Amino acid sequence: LTDKWTLAEEVARIVGYDLIPAELPVAPPGRGYTVAQTLRRRVADALASAGHTEVLSYPFFDEATNDLFGSAEAPAVAPAASAESVVTHVPSVRLANALDDNQGWMRTSLIPGLLQTAARNRSRGLTDLALFEAGLVFLPEVGATYGHAMLPGATRPSDAELAALDAAIPPQPRHIAGVFNGDAVVRQPGQRAQSFDYSHALDAVRLIGSAAGVTLEIRQGSHHSFHPGRCAQVLLGDAVIGYAGEVLPTVAESFHLPGRVVAFELDLDAISAVAGNPVTAAEVPVMPAATQDVSLVVGVGVASADVQAALVEGAGELLEHARLVDIYDGENVPEGTRSLTYALRFRASDRTLTQAEATAAKEAGVALAAARFGAVIRD
Image (cartoon, rainbow, N blue to C red; front, side, top):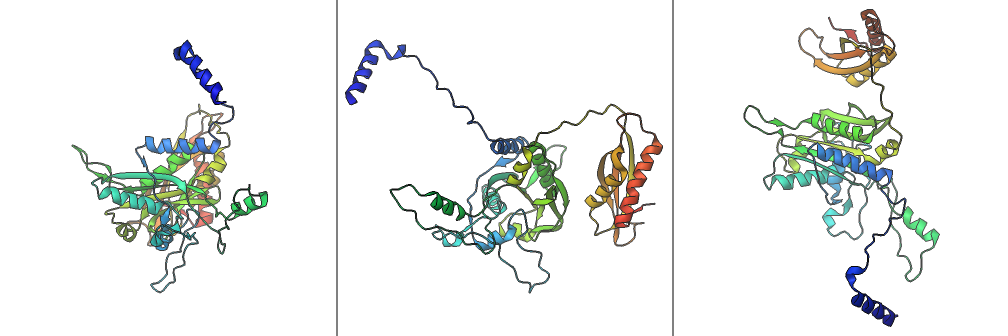
């Protein structure tokens, strides 16, 4: 065989290597990006195009750091009712042969790694940061033990051994998360600096939903590591797939991050499972719209998203769009309540709506909000 190859090389040398044609092999079909890979790239490209920087961080933490954020699907620990409350640890995977005994737990959230990366960048003079990461987290089931004995060498493992090895691996969903710190708009002539706040985390969540072609619902939520009143749940259908908001100042300080720190984290696998469906383009409206505003007084404990959902449901198909535009709790509003103002847009596909029709639809929505939450129109 060696002589044959030597002879072929000698012939090629005499004839001339430059006369041998160069042809690229044809790529076998069906080896392009999968649907999930395409979605991940589209989401990452959308965030990068919006000015965010993608980073990669280590997946190893100590147990206390894992307890800070837990998984995106469920908070690790409910807010403590008192100083004597017992904190329950997040179920997490501990490595038997960790490189560092203090960093021997696999991450259950991407946010701590992003906070560490942000702190490292700030220590090097980069103070305005919008970072994101897409990666695996490790979420073992409660009470489960993971691990497997060494497989025999020199032979192919049996199907049963491979199945047992696969069962010894904890669930590893892919998440996407972001952390913001510093100024979103830097100071310049005629422009004051504007720091990042929780609205930028919500905007990033909406951008991800838009890039993936899914509808993500944002509702008031709570998380033990996010600021009370500045935390939102992110829902896909009826399932909570993540959180977004402002990180508690004490948590930010523990990572040596000054000022306001905002973050979000979503279950990207849950989004990918829904995003494979075809996206239907909305019909371009040709009839003019009728717009009205309504201000409703409700208890401070009532979520604005729930009131908006009641308005939409009660108003029916004539209501094309509803948006919260103002929250007021000052004078002329009873104590313990607040006023929520919504901008409503009505439209019919086959005719020009009259003001009376739009008003009737609005009043139907108000009636349902009143029945569910005791909402009254603000004078």
